[in-house]
Image (cartoon, rainbow, N blue to C red; front, side):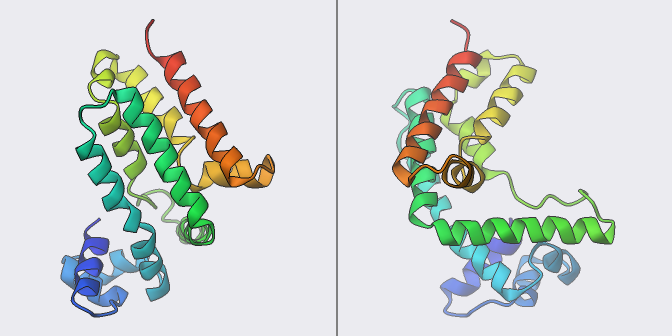
Length: 188
């Protein structure tokens, strides 16, 4: 997202970016920027949450020789470990995403603007190349969507709060679920 990239560049220069500064640097309107980040705190929170993005993208680029399945399972474990290690931050981010969605719903903007970029779906597609190319489009899209259920703060929160698992157990169950989904989706 251009706003986050611009804010990161400002941060890298030693400035603490405001939403308005990030919008200007990204060449987007302030209205658009404030729709995604209503406060400076929400922008700074996004910057801290996306800190793991570079690590994951580096991993996916570096591990091209692994099997697609191994890349997927390591991705699932890596991101869910990040959720465990930064649980308060991730839950705070989730609260922000929910607040953003609810605010848009109250103003009638509804679902015109996505609340998130959908990076995990892109990561799944990258991890599973070229396996996904062997599936019809509808099955590929269904597999990517199903695997999104086992990666991230939402899945981790269900494991912790609803299932009352500790972090290690939560990560193990999510890994198992990724395996089960992939096994069910791939032709034998």
